[in-house]
Length: 65
Image (cartoon, rainbow, N blue to C red; front, side, top):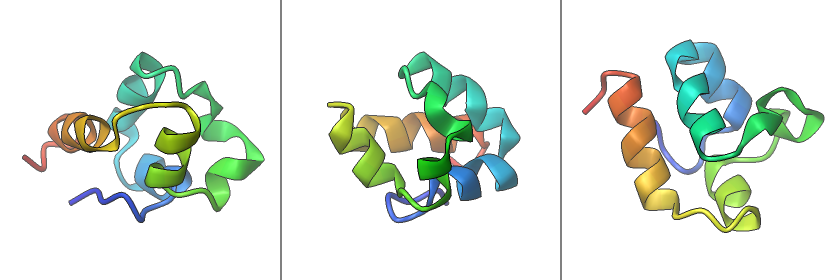
């Protein structure tokens, strides 16, 4: 399960198919330095994205829901 406490890098490393979801939400910074330590909730908040919907979409893309 992908959770809001996971880092962007952690999610992409474990579930590369989630890259398309990050791009859809305008989170193209998955390769930036912040992606190594910033968690999903922090990134979503900074970018004004609904974290619950993002997590739902990420988990669906990863085949976890």
